Amino acid sequence: MTNSNPYEVYAELIKQSNELMEDMNIGPLELAASYITHAMRIYRTVLPEEDYHKMMTSIYKNRHKIGPIERPVLH
Image 1: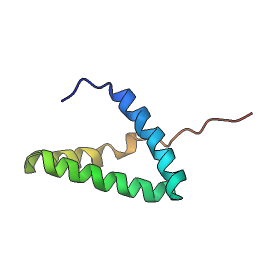
Image 2: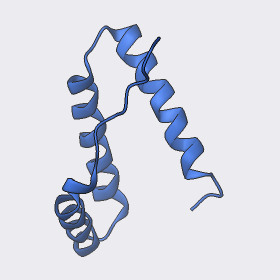
Image 3: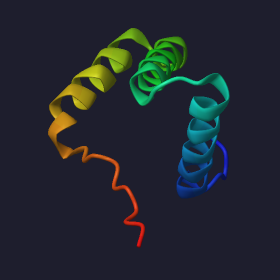
Image 4: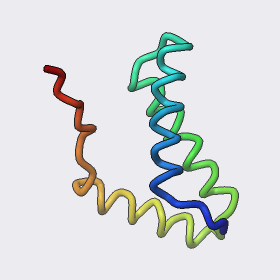
C-alpha cells in the first residue's frame, strides 16, 4: 500500500473521468461500466479468491450507501 491520500486519488479520478468523457465523446454510463469492470479485474488479480468474493459481497451489501454525484448549482 502507498502513502497516497485517498481523497486526492478520488479527486484525480474525477478530473480524469471528466476529461475522458469529453475527449472520447462518451457518456457517464460507458465510463462507469469500464471503471467497474477494471476495478473488479484489479480485485480479482490482487486478492485471494475468498477475499475477492468477500469484497464483491461487501460492495453488493453496501450499494444503498452510495449516493448520486452532486452537481454544482450554477447561478
